Image 1 (tube, rainbow, N blue to C red):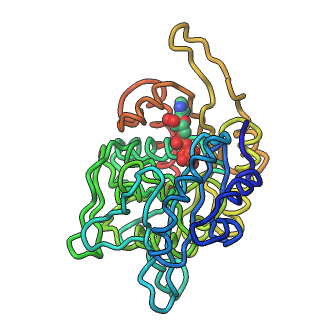
Image 2 (image 1 turned 90 degrees about the vertical axis):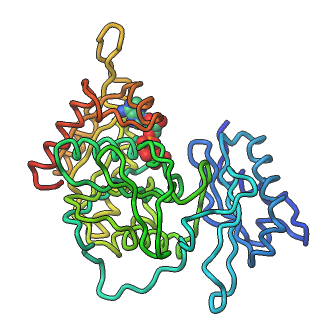
Image 3 (image 1 turned 45 degrees about the vertical axis):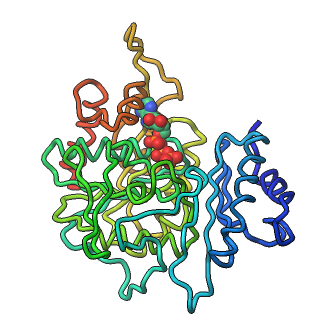
Length: 373
Ligand SMILES: Nc1ncnc2c1ncn2[C@@H]1O[C@H](COP(=O)(O)OP(=O)(O)OP(=O)(O)O)[C@@H](O)[C@H]1O
């Protein structure tokens, strides 16, 4: 049984706080989302002291939700002090790393309030093109496509950056095989890491491994601004930005802060994913970010034993939709076990040879020839 948002709220409403009331009656829950059994939320306390007193409630909430059927629970305690005198909000503890404080390179503070940016979206110095990779819903392979496309472009000689802006569930560090932490000598400029010929920066590299972070709008926008402007990207032909799924604060904030060349949307052939993708499309239109095209991921499956080609999630839906919308269809990427295994091992499949790597090479070639990447 998969939990609904209302059921989650009901469960949270039963958990009494040490000084009275519940997480719901005291209005401490922020950014609650329930998707495919994964429950994510922030418990926002008024002060770091109050937050410390809520650690036990956080653990009880996680246990109760898991018992009620949640596949996983990512609950984060944050504290907000009064705006005038408080330091930037502090991530106190995440559900996946009990007792661990969020850590970053020495003296580097991540996730403060964004600084005002007069004059609209900025052109980031040294970066020729910025492409956001989005999807209407989670799990369609947006991060997988981003890392593999980055590698495929680098293999064809492009200078490529990959920014993991999926601040809620960063996965690029794992997919690109990075565990080292980026350095910051002066506490301001962050030195990105290099993997497989790609310059990479991810919130995941600044957090402890397995830590889940869910931030509210202002903190999140501050973190995103830092990842865009404080990272020493160097000279890049293209920066790929792996967005969180859906249509939210990060997308909005990104479009407001950086001059995007455009967005690429990833979808699976399933209708539901496509409908969600259309919502994302609508969002990019509203943000005046050009949509450069659609990609169909998990398109066809080649049986490794008999070579038979099957279309497990259907096939061609994204191409048909692209046609109907008069948008470029950029390519179909096969469903293959090795894609997941390679991603989990930190060596994107596009690094090697074979049909999937060839599909990524074609995609990269098409983007380069089209002047997109
Ligand atoms: N073409 C593919 N063939 C096989 N497995 C795939 C393929 N694309 C993605 N996957 C696997 O599907 C899972 C989800 O992929 P991924 O994390 O890239 O999706 P996502 O859209 O970025 O999700 P989220 O937005 O929730 O982070 C991963 O385990 C990944 O390895």
